[in-house]
Image (cartoon, rainbow, N blue to C red; front, side, top):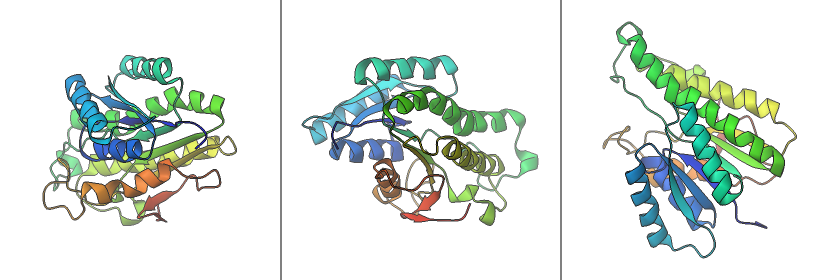
Length: 239
């Protein structure tokens, strides 16, 4: 890379978000970590900086609640003021909230809205904040952390609000990729699989390191890389 890239990672203080920050920092990418819990974010960023001790890249944490427009706006301004711009956006912040065997009839409107606010509207606002910066650079990589549960081809019962939110996130990926075609900004979704996180639980099949490998790869795609696609294990999968 001719310059130190800057990655923005929402929900970066734990789980897959934290591991994405770790791996990008280790590859020489500066990281702006967004964390709803400001104290937790500062602690996580300090630990990564001490662990990796990057030569040029740096990591900083900023308060970020992706459900609040003013919070997203403040976050974007802080990133621009300190880092100058952002080259990479990882929309990682996400919630499940439902029981795994829940049904549509059991999912109340408040829960449905909360899930959509974080998983979809939050990602939309983050894109609206950082795409203009990327346009000025003529370069950008947007990675939306989706799920196989959002695949229409494999859509089934259970977790209806979460499934619908991830299907909508995939639709955002396709729509934005089409809008940005030819600008140097690549937009893709990733299904990390069932990962051992607070959300995935201890019985999940994959480690966090395995879960984020494809997301990190998508963050660093070359200019001729794919856009508007859905990936698992670096292979395109059906929507």
